[in-house]
Image 1 (spheres, helix red, strand yellow):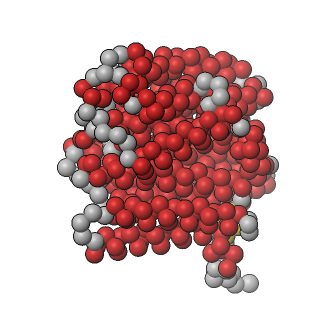
Image 2: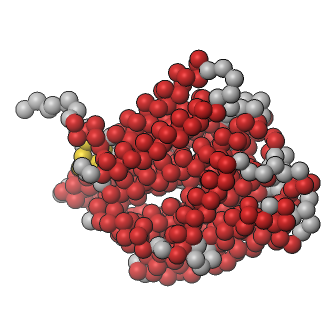
Image 3: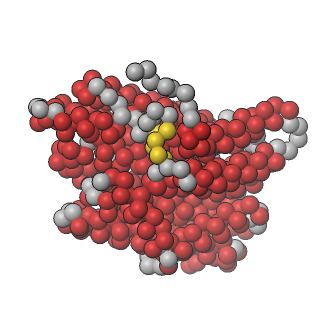
Length: 488
């Protein structure tokens, strides 16, 4: 019986957020070609597009199910991560409006690249097939490579883009080889069908041994995207060299989407052989926390410190993957939402204080910010305390749920070591607080320009989100638990 490949109305509805983002991205590129003078309005159009995509994501969830011949699946899990990356994009575009104006880099291609990158991230979150995973990852990655080097006259931007592109391409080759290997052994690239093939094989143990190699190759490819050890070497350099709003975007959006597909693949396709990869994840989680935290202790550049910090936080999320349970998946989802908001907020403040050409990006450059801009300093303190994991912030409950999931899976030593790492991290985060409130104002904060309206909105939205997740975590956690039920 011939297969009907024609898309249905349900297919289009379920893929509506990506369609909306693509239309707005193309429209911005076309308007860029005929625009003269200031192009700030293109950023406003991007914000409208992201808002429409968020509404489209809600509409798509009203009709959940597979789309485009089971290449995609729209469920609560995909809806959660689609919404998260769209919110990340919205906040980063808000922060970019004044930043690009200050740096003389206002251009429509910047906003279009963010939208196209989010198209890939949304598709990645909804992917139910390894071929679609590869395509979505490339859509997101290629746009992000260009964003990392967007300010072409800045040598730091050029260096970060080159490093990101070369190492990213190398990691993608591992991912593609792993996908080919899985297809060769199971005859399919659909995630559910791979799981069924592994369970139905009469020589399952022998098949597991071979597919374990393919899983390791896929692990390498995705491990680079989420910057876990030993594939983390690119993150500090790229975060330091890229424009601050781009660093904020890379540290939250692509990472969340990559973790989304990471969990979907390993908790679906490779679930029958979890005894072969759990210990690998255990080791990677511990190594990421140790390398990220101890390297961050020695940093004086705030952006570079946050780069190493992101490695440690990726390690905390890997603890949830090591738990290999629905509780772990829900905990990781909550953690990624909290991390996205607090990290974006921290980077936005740094982009504001850094001044033109990001001259002031050291911890000592934050000296006296509490006196010069008490509100901005207070918001930065909220983000820093959340990164530490102080109660009444989203970061606290994020870590609490992750370590609780690890304990439920009897990962006692990993939990203990994770808690010790959290205590170590408090030292370098508190250096920021000390500089803000206990040192005299430095050169960086004397002539600081008050934040623009867009910047204020982005900062307050991030801070309110962090506090809301810390005071009222149950709403998001309930939806995350519902989403994790898809992995039975």
